[in-house]
Amino acid sequence: MGKSSKDKRDAYYRLAKEQGWRARSAFKLLQLDEEFNLFENVTRVVDLCAAPGSWSQVLSRVLIKGETFGRCAWQDREAKFRQNMLKVVPSAAASQQEVKEREGNKPRPDVKIVSIDLQPISPLPGIITLRADITHPATVPLLLKALDPEYDPETMNQQAQTPVDLVISDGAPDVTGLHDLDIYVQSQLLFAALNLALCVLKPGGKFVAKIFRGRNVDLLYAQLKVFFEKVYVAKPRSSRASSVEAFIVCINFQPPEGFKASLEEPLGVGSRLSKMLEERNAVAPIAAPPSLMQDPATGTWNSREESSLPVDDDGIEDVQVEDLSSEPLDKDIRWVAPFVACGDLSAFDSDASYKLPDDHVSLDPVQPPTAPPYKRAIELRRANGGAYGKPATVST
Image (cartoon, rainbow, N blue to C red):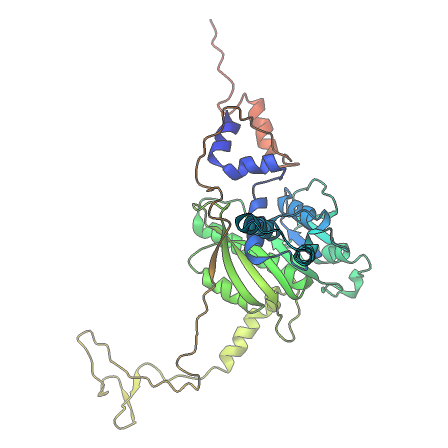
């Protein structure tokens, strides 16, 4: 009964089991690929916070097995639709062109995929899994060793010898219901994923991560814009509209000149932030005390009481400040990340309920959790007789 109810409420949960995906989140990555073509010319990938492995499963089936999903599947459907509508039989040259365009659907050579999570991940074909904490500096040598077996950790160089093309992260903290706290913790997890991505991404690489949209999320977008040419905020159709989650898609990695990534110094600053602030304040211009005001007519400095500036009823003086900046007035001083909705509008609505056919059979999950953190709680609840405890014995 419970499974059938969830199949009605969540169409993507049901589709994930029918199509063999480990979790419904696989559709989120596929819909992101439909919009941004994430897998184009990609052979080396790092999947952070990967458990239970649905995103790694997508990578395995697309890059290693050569199956068609995402944008490639959408292009194939469009081509077949046009042929059926126009009733055109493709020529030999057109057929060769289509084959050439779909060469990326074949298994790609030299594919390297590394998945990292605190929880164990069941094996996947061609996937290297690591059980590690992405917020700990010791994870960087483990990742670099998995990417390049010849990597020597004694060199203390936290840069990949052969960088990767794509870094993805679908990680999120255990939500508490306090939205401000959840958004803050998620932003810190995102920064940890970004710092690790900066150590392994090649110039021109891509970075995709889950975010929680909050009040000051524009600052996060601006920080990402420092390292990437294009930054988008995407909302896949399989992501519930009632959820604050979205995905940040960063394209064309362009590290600043002289930047060197390290988890010990996040975003190139780390523990030097306080010293940098002291040095900045030391060279900051000294402003006049607020008790002194300059008379624009005579150019002399007078006290607030002797100032000839107009004062309103509230005691506030109106001061005209000239813009002496050399920058043009029409220059953009604020950058806003574009918001993109991903996925076909005719696809299932993740917040809707759908009627199931009479002969519907609810399937078990493809891959149950290997070692869920709540496993011990379930065992204790079963030992106590279920959610409501053991029935009380009545003595006669």
